[in-house]
Image 1 (cartoon, rainbow, N blue to C red):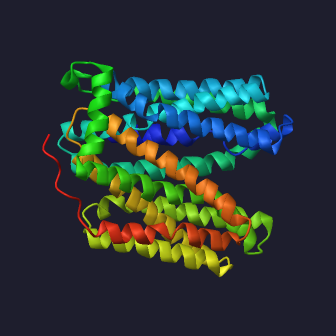
Image 2 (image 1 turned 60 degrees about the vertical axis):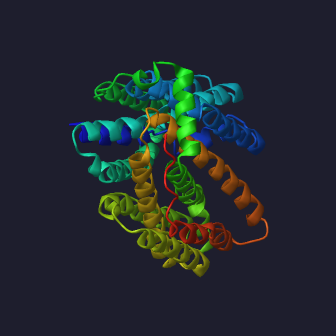
Length: 384
């Protein structure tokens, strides 16, 4: 039942019909491109500021509580967008949505790992999380498929109401998740003690630090580039109506990568390095081909990166030994946010002088360096 509930929570969290149309809502409300960009900045900054503090809150209080509160905050934000469409309502909504991401990040992984560990099934973590990631991808694809019919029938109000209901359902599902722990007991229940414990473990334990950095870079680079995949489709010269099909091919690859993550958990450092290095080469070749057939390589690359990210997270969870699991995981989440912003900025700068294919090739180059570094095992953990 635990695993089924985790999958359901991941699915509902991405089944938001507003996702495919909220940019249209902003434009129809009269926002400029500059104003829309500022909203994305507000969203990103909110998540970054709250990421680690919310992880410590999850450790000190309750992971399940945060997994319940997160969707409710996002639902409140989507309600504001739908009922009071204006710049400041959108800004407030992005603050709430950013807070939701921070509350869930860290808490979800920590609860999943420790509940599996309680059942003696922690070895299944990579499999479970890979499938949960795939459930989220399928939900996002389904939301795109349903958004237009619902929008045609009832406009922004209909997709907004559906999105709020999905968030409420997500909060209800969170309350059904088990949590067999005494929050904060190992650190005397002090929020600040939990926060210090998590940051200290992430900073001083070399194995944990290695895991945090690996999760941050491996997951964030391809995650940011995924936003620009439609541009690659347009660049191939296919009809605009065909671009979603090319994006779908990529999503199939991502889904497959998540489903295969459990099988790849035990791969050696060399095999892991070859996976991400080979994926980078496949991505560069597919993106630079300028041909629709190149999306097969891009799909394989994204699938390999998804797999590598899940495996990196699983290995990080195994290395965490202190009481602040959600806090340490949130440190990795903060790293992902920082790397994501760097990739967005770099892509914007590179795209002014390079084709989208060339920009992809340049920005996956760090994976080759990461692959070389991965072959070197992390230094022994510092004795606590």
